[in-house]
Image (cartoon, rainbow, N blue to C red; front, side, top):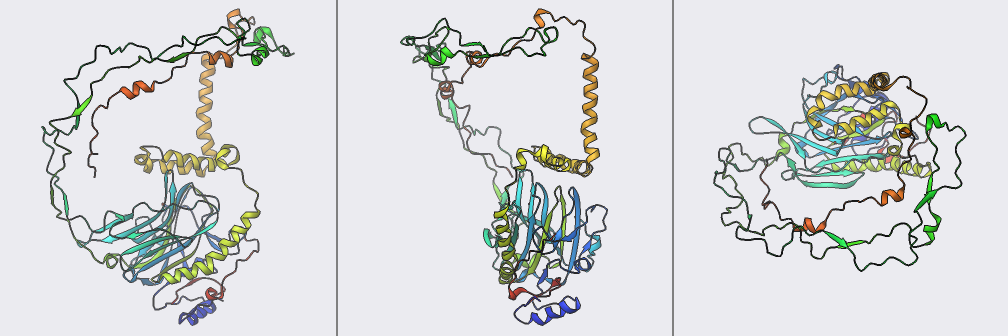
Length: 562
């Protein structure tokens, strides 16, 4: 049994013996997804949620956790808290996450549902009001640990406040613990594995700001037509010097260069390979006249060079490039235009924003993911940061240390990115394709229309293969109809005989144009940029040790602790 110090110990003992939930004075909530988890957590019955959670022990661990079993699914599950937790007393949220098969595109966060008598876990939806959303999210270039607060304004409007520059998700396959601490002094901390990754003020680090600005730009004011905001102009009085030759070449022949002694003018740089033999199955009528491969002339390797010697080129000291007039200060420049400031009609000051976050009455996992094998475990909701530390020490740390030791003995896996198409299943390959597709510029606008179709492809291998194969076959048929058929003659004309590809030396002798740095240097700016314009996330029997201070009910379950 788990032993919890303080008045909550007796209550936990009753929970272990009679499978009841107990309520402590601070209404803390803890879930380890042990025995009876499915009687406490309810899968949403909404048609959108075609994925169903399961409870399993990750490989090499004996700790049962909530698992995402199938990729390319929407999942929704939630549980009511025995008693609502009030953020106004300070709020601490914590959970463990193991990405056993990686995270390429999907959410792995928790929603802490706003307390309401009308809330029915079976009716959970994406739009179900929440107080805080916290946890891992990744897709394409997005990789963040969300912290989103839903704050109620004085006019009753509820607005999401997103943490700026959140920390990134740990993408290895170990178990990590994520902790959010919101203090009554309006500061916050994000911890990963107990280490601080982000800290700051609720008033400074969220967008939109908790409190709007006192002044805003006047929306009715526009820049005058005669306003000049070009800081530099070309000097109108400047003229090109008489000795400026724009036609001078960038490079000239080096007249001082001399042909190296011993240069073999009459030797070709490459010769036919004397050891090469025509293949036995070579058919000159079909394949053309056979030519041996070319090799570097061994005589050239020992000497300074072969073939016709050409004088090298050097930079032309008289080259100046195109002339441009110098830039001078614009006498009519007025500076960067800014609209005048006016009082913000929507301004308010909320000095105690935690009082305007709704109480938390339930916990939900409401996600869409293109991956599988996520494990959620040891979910904690409390008002006390020291409890989160105790649970990290007694639950997560022994598990994590055990995984690290096991990892040392594992054979390194082949990098999936280097051999994804040959080593992954069709579904996983499509998952990666979805991730890359949604990260392309402009794809965010099309995301709502593409998600359903791409998800269906990823979930149905036969449909995915058909989607690719059918157009490919039709394309091949079209090519055959245009260019196919029997050959007109078995005799290969001389001009159709197989030609060998140019050799390395021949390629080297081709004239390659090199950008001229001097010309770029001489090009003046087109104008002063000035200031920028303003623009408004099976067990193998190996057990992890848990300290006696956190060994409550042996059957597992949901508990509230003091």
